[in-house]
Length: 248
Image 1 (tube, rainbow, N blue to C red):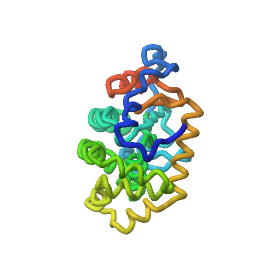
Image 2 (image 1 turned 30 degrees about the vertical axis):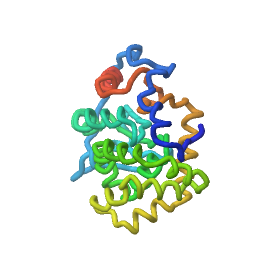
Image 3 (image 1 turned 120 degrees about the vertical axis):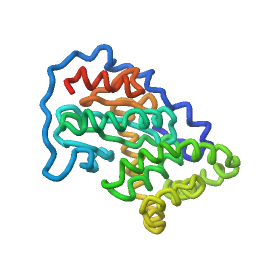
Image 4 (image 1 turned 90 degrees about the vertical axis):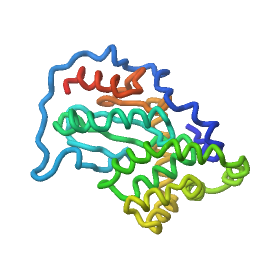
């Protein structure tokens, strides 16, 4: 997979909502499974508050040993991903993750420089605020897209020769991501440190390249259910049907 990080944002938005081109398991073809058993969270906690980083570079909410594992490859600049976040968060957490039957993992799929900036600062606070910041970034997405689409071509041309982490810092400043996370408890110095982390930026890119080799990823959002890609599945209603068919 090649990341066109320094291209104007409009040049890469076509990959948003492209999951209907997948050629693997369709929701309509998922065999109805028997209901699975739930599991109570550790005393004094909820599964919705339980978040860990995964070896694949994502962030998992819920019971790490849940029998039903839902993964989203999402882009923070994709309007279809934002719609899924808006529709799915409350029912997904309340009706599925909270039971211990389902875990939900979000993996950033980088389609442009704004995505990698958002991923770096979005994970800067660690597990605790991760999903709160993610959901709020999705809500804030129209402002970010409007801002980035108004940037001159020269802005993108200047970024072309910069290292990945420097591109991320420039995008973060232009998109207002640093102020965004400052308002949510992450100090500016820490946010800039996360953006400057060349190792983390390269790690995210390599994980995306591996994901594209393994499946590949046709567009965002793309969903995996217990390791299998769901075809023609881009909204909450379709995902919920798949979860129910899997026994949730």
